[in-house]
Amino acid sequence: MSPSAPPRVFMGMTEVAGYLAGLKRGFDALGIPSLVVDGARHPFQYSEVEPRHGLIRLLQWITRRRIRSSGIAAGLWLCFQMLFQIMVLIWALPRFDCFIFAAGHSFLEGHDLPVLKRCGKCVVSILMGTDSRPPYLTRMPQVSGAGMIRRARWLKRRLRRIERSSDYVINSPLQSHFQENRFIMFQAMGIPRSVNAALLPSPRSERVRILHAPSFPEGKGTSVIRRAIQNLIQAGIPIDYLELTGQPNSEVLRQLRSADFVVDELFSDALMATFAAEAAACGKPAIVAGYGQNLLRSILPPVMIPPIYHCRPDQVESAIQTLAIDVGRREDLGRRAFEFVRKFWSPPEVARRYLQLFQREAPEEWFFDPGTLRYIAGWGLTPDLALQQIRNVLEIGGGIHALGLADKPDLQRRLVDFAEGRITDFEGSRGKA
Image (tube, rainbow, N blue to C red; front, side, top):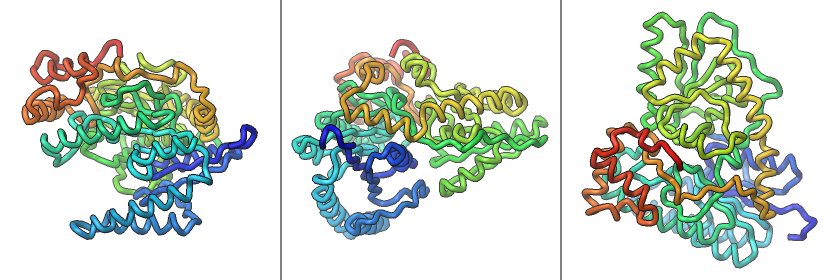
């Protein structure tokens, strides 16, 4: 890459909640040539842009066939998929200067990263949840304790590969248990979301319209949210509740326009994830519940903290009631959320921060040291379910080594203390990170 020429950016191999599509819009606005390759195309149709290159279209077709197959057929399609991903790698090497991989999915699951480095490419790996969070701290239906141990070992090896050969790794602090090196905080980069041309007013009605759009209802705490809203309706609060599951992103955005506010999720380890960011881009406030958000606020610089209504999971009914009856508060929160996304998370602003990474100019305040992490609540978990999963791993794995946290003795001890009843509340995660 010539010092005066803009970098050519490759992004893939899996789209996650429209993140790469949004980032491409930012690069386009800055005149930076870029390409997004989504191996299988996202099921919620965040981007309808079809790749023009026949090799990439063929890779997508093969990947979809693998996903729909089982047994020996799935294995054969996987071999074809790997072959075509190698072909895309060979095609991309001379054409791009910088490579951004989402959810840890590169051409060959991290084994290709040393090749890219030796060829002088800038490599940025973005981790987005279950690709870095310990399985025993994640809501994982139908996964046994032994399965969690196997996945934890695989995940730890994979992350070491990624860390060793990436120029920068991006992750959220509260899901970085298995990382060993400093990384860029996800909140420093932001979620690229285009705001509406103007702040969308809520419909003037005596009834309050609340939207909840869970991609994974069990992990998002949907049953508890439903029950809380039903209680408020029975108490006489005029609420119209709409729940969308498995719908394309275009339908979610359409329904957002007429909502008063949204309830995102119950057990979050983030402040503002994709759905809450989409709501903010429409000027709609979001309730996001979780156990670690006060801790995350103590880690992040104030400029990185988005305006959301935060509460503990057991306070969600009260939070919904507050925004349902306090029109001024919810409109003020929606206005501030809109301005935050417009100013800090617009696609061009997020893309500019990635250009700083390409130029090796990341400020010190963007970094987090995972060795200081003390968070034990995870994502999507009630305390009882977390306790069960951690105990299963300790018992089946034969001790604390099964946690995969030998490099973090303080965090390892906290998890053992929780499993043995010496920490009785997830708020035991609170304190200096």
